[in-house]
Image (cartoon, rainbow, N blue to C red; front, top):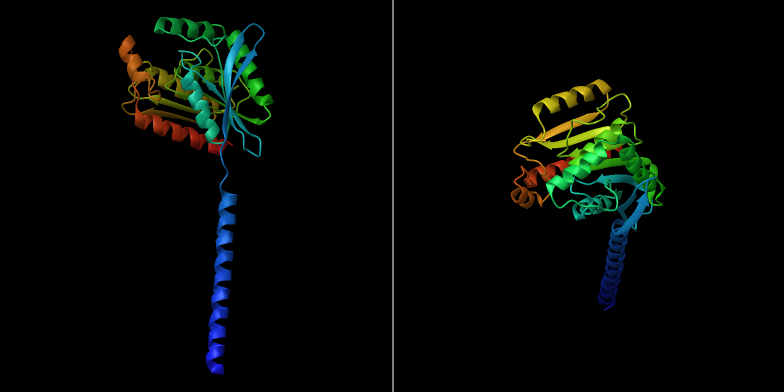
Length: 280
């Protein structure tokens, strides 16, 4: 009888011990999971700012739950002007952990409704480099002063017209660690030179009739002479504006060689992420 009782007691003790151990293990997993999951809270805010002569309307995006200052990235619009597409890219960068500022190079948030108007707006900026630099630098300084930004870590990216602006500003010696241009013109008002210090990424479409082989050869030769690290990628079958889902309809409406290319869009975004990871 004593032996039977002892066995029962031993069995109960073991069961209690196992339950206690199981509860402890579960708690550790929950604690570990809680520590690993950090909720992302993307905030977006419209911001009015100005240069000496121009009032501009931009959009700042960041992760409100970030605990440290993050690199800041300027996002420069297509020749259509500062629109929702530019803001979407800013939000995407914020989700990656950056503070992104979608800027306004036309002033007053102007947007073109026709290619002729877009060309006029773009030409007014690129033909007056003093004013272009003033508008760009106003946005750059505002980004650096943002409370969520590490002012020592700044990049700029741009689409079409915006890519040309990003590359041109880097060539003027702007305080940038990296620049990326997507379906961008590369016959620039300020070509690559010894003032260029930023890491450079250019993602263009191999089938883009707006970028000639001569322009590519001239641009890459100039980049080679600077000694700066750069990458020029031409995506097969990709046309102009290949990152924009609105490209197909705009191309049809205005009879322009525009087309969205999902593969090139995805690959070029991955190329951007890789460069930013390396630089920052």
